[in-house]
Length: 446
Image (cartoon, rainbow, N blue to C red; front, side, top):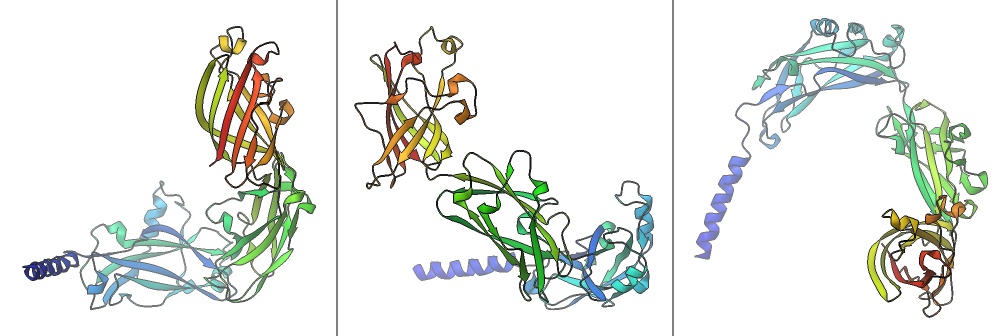
Protein backbone atom coordinates (compact mmCIF):
# COMPACT_ATOMS: atom_id res chain seq x y z
CA UNK A 1 0.00 0.00 0.00
CA UNK A 2 2.86 2.36 0.87
CA UNK A 3 4.49 1.68 -2.51
CA UNK A 4 1.25 2.51 -4.33
CA UNK A 5 0.94 5.80 -2.46
CA UNK A 6 4.59 6.66 -3.24
CA UNK A 7 4.14 5.99 -6.97
CA UNK A 8 0.95 8.07 -7.09
CA UNK A 9 2.73 10.92 -5.28
CA UNK A 10 5.61 10.88 -7.76
CA UNK A 11 3.21 10.89 -10.72
CA UNK A 12 1.32 13.85 -9.23
CA UNK A 13 4.56 15.75 -8.52
CA UNK A 14 5.97 15.23 -12.01
CA UNK A 15 2.75 16.31 -13.69
CA UNK A 16 2.58 19.44 -11.54
CA UNK A 17 6.22 20.27 -12.24
CA UNK A 18 5.65 20.03 -15.98
CA UNK A 19 2.75 22.48 -15.76
CA UNK A 20 4.68 24.90 -13.52
CA UNK A 21 7.57 25.29 -15.95
CA UNK A 22 5.54 25.93 -19.07
CA UNK A 23 6.15 29.20 -20.94
CA UNK A 24 3.60 31.97 -20.90
CA UNK A 25 1.01 31.64 -23.67
CA UNK A 26 2.00 34.91 -25.35
CA UNK A 27 5.64 36.03 -24.71
CA UNK A 28 6.40 39.64 -25.64
CA UNK A 29 9.66 41.41 -26.56
CA UNK A 30 10.34 44.91 -25.16
CA UNK A 31 13.01 47.34 -23.90
CA UNK A 32 13.06 47.33 -20.06
CA UNK A 33 14.92 50.67 -19.92
CA UNK A 34 12.46 52.38 -22.25
CA UNK A 35 11.76 56.08 -22.63
CA UNK A 36 14.36 58.75 -21.89
CA UNK A 37 17.41 57.75 -19.85
CA UNK A 38 20.84 59.17 -18.98
CA UNK A 39 23.80 56.94 -19.83
CA UNK A 40 27.33 57.78 -18.75
CA UNK A 41 30.25 57.36 -21.14
CA UNK A 42 33.24 57.22 -18.81
CA UNK A 43 36.48 58.93 -19.84
CA UNK A 44 38.82 56.14 -18.77
CA UNK A 45 41.74 57.26 -20.90
CA UNK A 46 40.59 55.25 -23.90
CA UNK A 47 39.14 56.40 -27.22
CA UNK A 48 35.92 54.39 -26.95
CA UNK A 49 33.38 53.34 -24.36
CA UNK A 50 30.69 50.68 -24.75
CA UNK A 51 27.12 51.15 -23.48
CA UNK A 52 24.59 48.31 -23.57
CA UNK A 53 20.90 48.49 -24.46
CA UNK A 54 18.98 45.51 -23.04
CA UNK A 55 16.00 43.75 -24.63
CA UNK A 56 13.78 41.30 -22.72
CA UNK A 57 11.24 38.66 -23.72
CA UNK A 58 8.59 38.32 -21.03
CA UNK A 59 6.95 35.02 -20.10
CA UNK A 60 9.87 32.78 -21.05
CA UNK A 61 11.44 30.09 -18.92
CA UNK A 62 15.16 30.35 -19.78
CA UNK A 63 15.71 26.58 -19.36
CA UNK A 64 13.08 25.96 -22.07
CA UNK A 65 14.85 28.18 -24.65
CA UNK A 66 16.30 25.99 -27.37
CA UNK A 67 16.56 28.67 -30.07
CA UNK A 68 18.03 32.14 -30.38
CA UNK A 69 15.63 35.06 -30.80
CA UNK A 70 16.59 37.87 -33.17
CA UNK A 71 15.19 41.37 -32.70
CA UNK A 72 15.30 44.09 -35.36
CA UNK A 73 15.76 47.76 -34.45
CA UNK A 74 16.25 51.14 -36.09
CA UNK A 75 17.23 54.73 -35.27
CA UNK A 76 14.11 56.91 -35.20
CA UNK A 77 14.73 60.70 -34.99
CA UNK A 78 10.98 61.27 -34.56
CA UNK A 79 11.34 60.03 -30.96
CA UNK A 80 13.54 63.00 -30.07
CA UNK A 81 11.22 65.41 -31.86
CA UNK A 82 8.24 64.12 -29.87
CA UNK A 83 10.21 64.29 -26.61
CA UNK A 84 11.26 67.91 -27.16
CA UNK A 85 7.69 68.95 -27.94
CA UNK A 86 6.37 67.43 -24.71
CA UNK A 87 6.69 70.22 -22.12
CA UNK A 88 6.16 67.74 -19.27
CA UNK A 89 9.55 66.14 -19.95
CA UNK A 90 12.50 67.20 -17.79
CA UNK A 91 14.81 68.10 -20.67
CA UNK A 92 12.20 69.09 -23.27
CA UNK A 93 13.57 71.35 -25.99
CA UNK A 94 17.26 70.68 -25.34
CA UNK A 95 17.89 67.15 -26.70
CA UNK A 96 19.72 66.72 -30.00
CA UNK A 97 20.31 63.52 -31.95
CA UNK A 98 23.87 62.30 -31.56
CA UNK A 99 25.68 62.42 -34.97
CA UNK A 100 26.10 58.96 -36.47
CA UNK A 101 29.91 59.29 -36.60
CA UNK A 102 29.97 59.48 -32.78
CA UNK A 103 28.78 55.93 -32.21
CA UNK A 104 28.56 52.49 -33.75
CA UNK A 105 26.15 49.61 -33.13
CA UNK A 106 28.09 46.41 -32.54
CA UNK A 107 25.43 44.24 -34.22
CA UNK A 108 22.81 44.62 -36.96
CA UNK A 109 20.29 42.69 -34.85
CA UNK A 110 19.82 42.14 -31.15
CA UNK A 111 20.23 38.51 -30.14
CA UNK A 112 18.52 36.84 -27.16
CA UNK A 113 20.75 33.76 -26.80
CA UNK A 114 19.57 30.19 -26.28
CA UNK A 115 18.79 29.54 -22.62
CA UNK A 116 18.18 33.22 -21.79
CA UNK A 117 15.25 35.61 -21.81
CA UNK A 118 17.21 38.79 -22.45
CA UNK A 119 19.93 40.09 -24.76
CA UNK A 120 22.06 43.21 -25.22
CA UNK A 121 22.94 45.57 -28.03
CA UNK A 122 26.40 47.04 -27.59
CA UNK A 123 26.79 50.70 -28.57
CA UNK A 124 30.41 51.82 -29.04
CA UNK A 125 30.73 55.53 -28.21
CA UNK A 126 33.53 57.49 -29.93
CA UNK A 127 34.80 59.62 -27.04
CA UNK A 128 37.26 61.58 -29.18
CA UNK A 129 34.53 62.63 -31.61
CA UNK A 130 32.16 63.59 -28.78
CA UNK A 131 34.82 65.84 -27.26
CA UNK A 132 35.25 67.49 -30.65
CA UNK A 133 31.56 68.42 -30.52
CA UNK A 134 32.41 70.58 -27.51
CA UNK A 135 30.28 68.52 -25.10
CA UNK A 136 31.07 69.48 -21.50
CA UNK A 137 31.35 66.96 -18.69
CA UNK A 138 27.91 65.77 -17.54
CA UNK A 139 26.22 67.99 -20.11
CA UNK A 140 22.79 66.65 -21.10
CA UNK A 141 22.36 67.22 -24.82
CA UNK A 142 23.00 64.37 -27.27
CA UNK A 143 20.91 61.20 -27.51
CA UNK A 144 20.45 58.07 -29.65
CA UNK A 145 16.75 57.32 -30.44
CA UNK A 146 16.13 53.58 -30.84
CA UNK A 147 12.96 51.68 -31.77
CA UNK A 148 12.31 47.94 -31.91
CA UNK A 149 10.84 46.93 -35.31
CA UNK A 150 10.33 43.18 -35.22
CA UNK A 151 11.30 39.80 -33.76
CA UNK A 152 12.05 36.36 -35.20
CA UNK A 153 9.88 34.64 -32.58
CA UNK A 154 6.82 35.70 -30.59
CA UNK A 155 5.59 39.31 -30.75
CA UNK A 156 6.61 42.80 -29.75
CA UNK A 157 4.87 44.44 -26.82
CA UNK A 158 1.59 46.09 -27.79
CA UNK A 159 2.49 49.24 -25.83
CA UNK A 160 4.54 51.33 -28.29
CA UNK A 161 6.33 53.15 -25.46
CA UNK A 162 7.92 49.89 -24.31
CA UNK A 163 9.55 49.57 -27.75
CA UNK A 164 11.18 53.01 -27.71
CA UNK A 165 14.32 54.27 -25.99
CA UNK A 166 16.08 57.63 -26.07
CA UNK A 167 19.61 56.97 -24.81
CA UNK A 168 21.09 60.31 -23.79
CA UNK A 169 24.91 60.05 -23.64
CA UNK A 170 26.90 62.16 -21.20
CA UNK A 171 30.67 62.39 -20.81
CA UNK A 172 31.73 61.66 -17.24
CA UNK A 173 35.04 61.59 -15.42
CA UNK A 174 35.69 58.45 -13.32
CA UNK A 175 35.70 59.32 -9.63
CA UNK A 176 36.71 58.05 -6.21
CA UNK A 177 34.48 58.28 -3.14
CA UNK A 178 33.95 56.98 0.40
CA UNK A 179 31.84 53.81 0.59
CA UNK A 180 29.73 55.42 3.35
CA UNK A 181 28.58 57.99 0.77
CA UNK A 182 27.60 55.42 -1.85
CA UNK A 183 23.82 55.83 -1.66
CA UNK A 184 23.57 59.61 -1.32
CA UNK A 185 24.34 62.68 -3.41
CA UNK A 186 25.99 64.45 -0.53
CA UNK A 187 28.62 63.82 2.11
CA UNK A 188 27.68 61.64 5.05
CA UNK A 189 27.96 62.12 8.82
CA UNK A 190 29.17 58.77 10.16
CA UNK A 191 28.77 58.09 13.88
CA UNK A 192 31.86 56.79 15.69
CA UNK A 193 31.45 55.80 19.35
CA UNK A 194 34.70 54.93 21.07
CA UNK A 195 35.47 53.47 24.49
CA UNK A 196 37.93 54.82 27.02
CA UNK A 197 40.14 51.70 26.96
CA UNK A 198 42.69 51.19 24.16
CA UNK A 199 42.30 52.49 20.60
CA UNK A 200 39.55 52.26 17.99
CA UNK A 201 40.90 50.84 14.74
CA UNK A 202 38.88 51.67 11.62
CA UNK A 203 39.09 50.73 7.95
CA UNK A 204 37.40 53.26 5.68
CA UNK A 205 36.54 51.83 2.27
CA UNK A 206 37.25 53.86 -0.88
CA UNK A 207 35.38 52.97 -4.07
CA UNK A 208 35.58 54.03 -7.69
CA UNK A 209 32.85 54.78 -10.22
CA UNK A 210 33.32 54.52 -13.95
CA UNK A 211 36.41 52.28 -13.88
CA UNK A 212 34.76 48.88 -14.04
CA UNK A 213 34.69 46.20 -11.36
CA UNK A 214 38.47 46.17 -10.91
CA UNK A 215 41.24 48.73 -11.36
CA UNK A 216 43.37 48.37 -14.49
CA UNK A 217 46.29 50.30 -12.99
CA UNK A 218 47.57 51.65 -9.67
CA UNK A 219 46.17 55.01 -8.59
CA UNK A 220 47.48 57.02 -5.64
CA UNK A 221 44.86 58.79 -3.51
CA UNK A 222 45.68 61.66 -1.14
CA UNK A 223 43.70 62.68 1.94
CA UNK A 224 43.36 65.71 4.18
CA UNK A 225 41.42 66.87 7.21
CA UNK A 226 39.15 69.73 6.16
CA UNK A 227 38.63 71.82 9.31
CA UNK A 228 36.25 74.19 7.49
CA UNK A 229 33.56 71.48 7.47
CA UNK A 230 33.17 71.08 11.25
CA UNK A 231 29.50 71.69 12.28
CA UNK A 232 28.62 74.21 14.97
CA UNK A 233 27.56 71.54 17.47
CA UNK A 234 31.06 70.11 17.91
CA UNK A 235 34.81 70.65 17.80
CA UNK A 236 37.54 69.44 15.47
CA UNK A 237 39.07 66.21 16.76
CA UNK A 238 42.58 67.10 18.02
CA UNK A 239 45.52 65.76 15.99
CA UNK A 240 46.75 63.96 19.11
CA UNK A 241 43.56 61.87 19.11
CA UNK A 242 44.01 60.08 15.77
CA UNK A 243 46.49 58.59 13.31
CA UNK A 244 45.79 58.92 9.58
CA UNK A 245 47.78 58.16 6.44
CA UNK A 246 48.16 61.04 4.00
CA UNK A 247 47.93 58.74 0.98
CA UNK A 248 47.15 55.17 -0.08
CA UNK A 249 47.40 53.20 -3.34
CA UNK A 250 44.25 51.91 -5.02
CA UNK A 251 45.95 48.81 -6.45
CA UNK A 252 45.56 47.29 -9.88
CA UNK A 253 43.14 44.36 -9.88
CA UNK A 254 41.31 45.54 -6.73
CA UNK A 255 37.68 46.65 -6.53
CA UNK A 256 38.21 48.88 -3.47
CA UNK A 257 40.93 50.45 -1.33
CA UNK A 258 41.24 50.80 2.45
CA UNK A 259 42.18 53.94 4.37
CA UNK A 260 43.26 52.92 7.91
CA UNK A 261 42.32 55.25 10.76
CA UNK A 262 43.16 54.96 14.45
CA UNK A 263 41.23 56.89 17.11
CA UNK A 264 43.27 57.24 20.31
CA UNK A 265 40.53 56.90 22.88
CA UNK A 266 42.57 58.23 25.79
CA UNK A 267 42.90 61.54 23.93
CA UNK A 268 39.14 61.99 23.42
CA UNK A 269 37.40 64.06 26.09
CA UNK A 270 34.17 62.92 27.70
CA UNK A 271 31.03 65.04 27.44
CA UNK A 272 32.15 66.56 24.13
CA UNK A 273 31.28 65.98 20.49
CA UNK A 274 34.12 65.95 18.00
CA UNK A 275 34.23 65.81 14.20
CA UNK A 276 36.91 64.51 11.87
CA UNK A 277 36.15 65.70 8.30
CA UNK A 278 38.16 63.46 5.95
CA UNK A 279 38.45 64.49 2.32
CA UNK A 280 39.91 62.73 -0.72
CA UNK A 281 41.95 65.74 -1.79
CA UNK A 282 43.72 64.44 -4.88
CA UNK A 283 44.30 61.41 -7.11
CA UNK A 284 47.11 60.57 -9.48
CA UNK A 285 44.54 59.82 -12.16
CA UNK A 286 40.87 60.78 -12.56
CA UNK A 287 39.23 62.87 -9.79
CA UNK A 288 37.66 62.65 -6.31
CA UNK A 289 33.85 62.75 -6.53
CA UNK A 290 32.79 66.37 -5.83
CA UNK A 291 29.71 65.22 -3.91
CA UNK A 292 30.98 62.09 -2.16
CA UNK A 293 34.65 62.67 -1.39
CA UNK A 294 34.12 64.12 2.11
CA UNK A 295 33.33 61.81 5.04
CA UNK A 296 32.36 63.59 8.24
CA UNK A 297 33.13 61.36 11.22
CA UNK A 298 31.25 62.30 14.40
CA UNK A 299 33.30 61.07 17.35
CA UNK A 300 32.03 60.65 20.91
CA UNK A 301 33.37 58.55 23.75
CA UNK A 302 31.61 56.51 26.39
CA UNK A 303 32.77 54.33 29.25
CA UNK A 304 32.11 50.63 29.88
CA UNK A 305 29.01 51.35 31.97
CA UNK A 306 27.00 53.45 29.52
CA UNK A 307 24.15 51.18 28.41
CA UNK A 308 20.40 51.04 28.50
CA UNK A 309 19.34 49.30 31.70
CA UNK A 310 16.27 47.44 32.81
CA UNK A 311 15.39 48.86 36.22
CA UNK A 312 13.56 46.95 38.97
CA UNK A 313 13.15 48.94 42.17
CA UNK A 314 11.35 49.00 45.48
CA UNK A 315 10.70 52.39 47.10
CA UNK A 316 9.50 52.65 50.70
CA UNK A 317 8.62 55.55 52.98
CA UNK A 318 6.79 55.92 56.30
CA UNK A 319 5.30 52.42 56.23
CA UNK A 320 4.25 52.53 52.56
CA UNK A 321 6.03 50.96 49.59
CA UNK A 322 5.92 51.00 45.79
CA UNK A 323 7.42 48.53 43.32
CA UNK A 324 8.20 49.66 39.76
CA UNK A 325 10.17 48.71 36.66
CA UNK A 326 11.21 50.62 33.55
CA UNK A 327 14.07 51.16 31.09
CA UNK A 328 16.75 53.74 31.81
CA UNK A 329 19.21 55.42 29.49
CA UNK A 330 22.58 56.48 30.85
CA UNK A 331 25.30 58.82 29.63
CA UNK A 332 29.02 58.83 30.35
CA UNK A 333 30.31 61.64 32.50
CA UNK A 334 33.82 60.34 32.96
CA UNK A 335 35.80 57.14 32.56
CA UNK A 336 34.32 55.68 35.73
CA UNK A 337 31.00 57.53 36.09
CA UNK A 338 27.56 57.56 34.47
CA UNK A 339 24.55 59.82 35.00
CA UNK A 340 20.99 58.54 34.90
CA UNK A 341 17.46 59.41 35.99
CA UNK A 342 17.16 57.29 39.07
CA UNK A 343 13.61 57.49 40.36
CA UNK A 344 10.53 59.63 40.84
CA UNK A 345 9.50 61.01 44.24
CA UNK A 346 6.44 58.81 44.73
CA UNK A 347 5.84 60.18 48.20
CA UNK A 348 5.75 63.95 47.66
CA UNK A 349 3.36 65.67 50.07
CA UNK A 350 0.56 68.05 49.09
CA UNK A 351 2.75 70.98 50.12
CA UNK A 352 5.21 70.17 47.34
CA UNK A 353 4.55 72.43 44.33
CA UNK A 354 5.16 69.76 41.69
CA UNK A 355 2.70 67.40 43.34
CA UNK A 356 0.00 70.07 43.31
CA UNK A 357 0.31 70.35 39.52
CA UNK A 358 -0.09 66.62 39.06
CA UNK A 359 3.64 66.13 38.49
CA UNK A 360 6.23 64.05 40.26
CA UNK A 361 9.82 65.18 40.76
CA UNK A 362 12.28 63.58 38.31
CA UNK A 363 15.70 63.20 39.90
CA UNK A 364 19.11 62.22 38.56
CA UNK A 365 22.37 61.13 40.10
CA UNK A 366 25.85 60.06 39.19
CA UNK A 367 27.19 56.56 39.85
CA UNK A 368 30.95 56.18 40.11
CA UNK A 369 32.33 52.65 39.82
CA UNK A 370 35.48 51.79 41.80
CA UNK A 371 37.07 48.53 40.56
CA UNK A 372 38.27 46.02 43.13
CA UNK A 373 39.98 42.62 42.99
CA UNK A 374 36.53 40.98 43.00
CA UNK A 375 34.93 41.68 39.59
CA UNK A 376 31.58 40.54 40.93
CA UNK A 377 31.70 43.20 43.62
CA UNK A 378 33.03 46.56 42.42
CA UNK A 379 32.39 49.41 44.85
CA UNK A 380 29.83 52.08 43.96
CA UNK A 381 29.81 55.73 45.00
CA UNK A 382 26.78 58.01 44.60
CA UNK A 383 27.52 61.48 43.20
CA UNK A 384 25.10 64.38 43.49
CA UNK A 385 24.46 66.00 40.12
CA UNK A 386 24.06 69.67 39.31
CA UNK A 387 22.93 71.66 36.27
CA UNK A 388 26.45 71.70 34.81
CA UNK A 389 26.60 67.90 34.91
CA UNK A 390 23.11 67.23 33.55
CA UNK A 391 22.86 70.15 31.14
CA UNK A 392 19.43 71.00 32.61
CA UNK A 393 18.85 74.08 34.75
CA UNK A 394 15.60 73.03 36.36
CA UNK A 395 16.07 71.92 39.96
CA UNK A 396 13.94 68.79 39.56
CA UNK A 397 16.48 67.14 37.24
CA UNK A 398 19.31 67.36 39.80
CA UNK A 399 20.07 65.06 42.71
CA UNK A 400 18.29 65.62 46.02
CA UNK A 401 20.55 67.42 48.46
CA UNK A 402 19.76 64.73 51.02
CA UNK A 403 20.78 61.82 48.75
CA UNK A 404 23.11 59.29 50.41
CA UNK A 405 24.02 55.61 50.57
CA UNK A 406 21.62 53.47 52.63
CA UNK A 407 23.73 52.80 55.74
CA UNK A 408 22.13 49.40 56.31
CA UNK A 409 22.45 47.96 52.78
CA UNK A 410 25.49 48.06 50.49
CA UNK A 411 25.63 49.06 46.83
CA UNK A 412 27.93 47.41 44.29
CA UNK A 413 28.46 46.65 40.58
CA UNK A 414 28.71 43.13 39.17
CA UNK A 415 31.10 43.34 36.21
CA UNK A 416 30.46 39.82 34.97
CA UNK A 417 26.70 40.32 34.75
CA UNK A 418 26.81 44.08 34.03
CA UNK A 419 24.39 44.73 36.84
CA UNK A 420 24.15 47.48 39.45
CA UNK A 421 22.78 46.65 42.91
CA UNK A 422 21.91 50.03 44.44
CA UNK A 423 20.60 50.99 47.86
CA UNK A 424 20.19 54.67 48.67
CA UNK A 425 17.92 57.07 50.48
CA UNK A 426 16.83 60.73 50.53
CA UNK A 427 14.49 62.87 52.63
CA UNK A 428 10.91 63.16 51.41
CA UNK A 429 10.48 66.37 49.40
CA UNK A 430 14.25 66.74 49.92
CA UNK A 431 13.35 68.34 53.24
CA UNK A 432 16.06 67.70 55.89
CA UNK A 433 13.34 67.59 58.55
CA UNK A 434 11.12 65.06 56.74
CA UNK A 435 11.19 61.24 56.86
CA UNK A 436 13.52 59.06 54.75
CA UNK A 437 12.56 57.56 51.41
CA UNK A 438 14.47 54.27 50.84
CA UNK A 439 15.22 52.93 47.35
CA UNK A 440 16.49 49.44 46.51
CA UNK A 441 17.17 49.17 42.77
CA UNK A 442 18.67 46.62 40.40
CA UNK A 443 19.89 47.83 36.98
CA UNK A 444 20.61 45.13 34.40
CA UNK A 445 22.32 46.11 31.15
CA UNK A 446 20.24 45.31 28.06
